[in-house]
Image 1: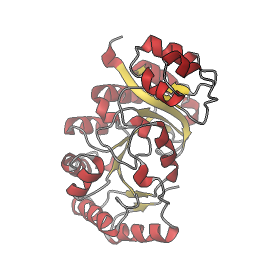
Image 2: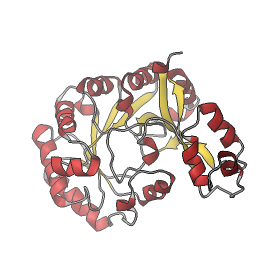
Image 3: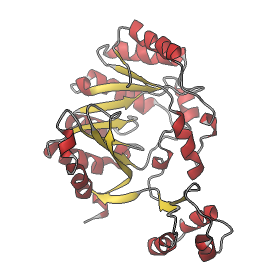
Image 4: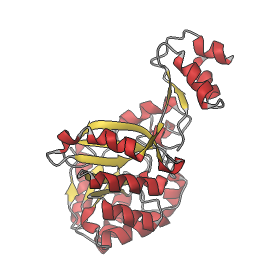
Length: 304
């Protein structure tokens, strides 16, 4: 088995009902080219797995930091990142509370497929598998290989993507997927750079090609609504106008801010302070945002 057959993932989550139709199993890929400070899965931003310290599980027994000659368990986790795999595992195995863990792992395409096939009985009523992340297309051909094997196994496939990827990968993923959830965060390119660290030029181009091409019927555009970033009338209007000009039949789903994401940031060194005190939008605010979309003649899906 070559390293090119391996996928970096941080979770395989069963019984998901928010990542596509029916009951689904979601495979979360590690690695994302964007650095959104509101990321719902910050453990998926960095591609390679690393040791992290779970403060809530720690019993402060001292085994890890005595072994690594560091002053506390949190610094021990950082120290483990400099060790080779075997040495790091030896220290982590010595933790009785399992408070030092890897925030991801490598699995082969066939190993992931084997896990998914265990759940086929739950996919009988319109369920299936969704690739999420991170950004699945950041792992390119291996993500396509997994999609193809899932399809060959007779399992409904969906992919959640930022569309920040080469066009050929986007088109190939669309061809072998049954459903595509395409994120559309910010229309203004300057604000997109400020928020994510990347221009949205590639995203806009891929979105244009996707919703005007032969796989347009598979696409649902998702707008994550983040206070202070994406959740304002001007941004939603600009996105809705962009979609309407190209294909008004493209359904749009507005995703209200989920405050649970902020709790994940203490486990890493990625930005998250900007969202720490944000609250979800009220029902009245969500209705206002949906009205903007509907007034452009676009179907607006209401999230469960």
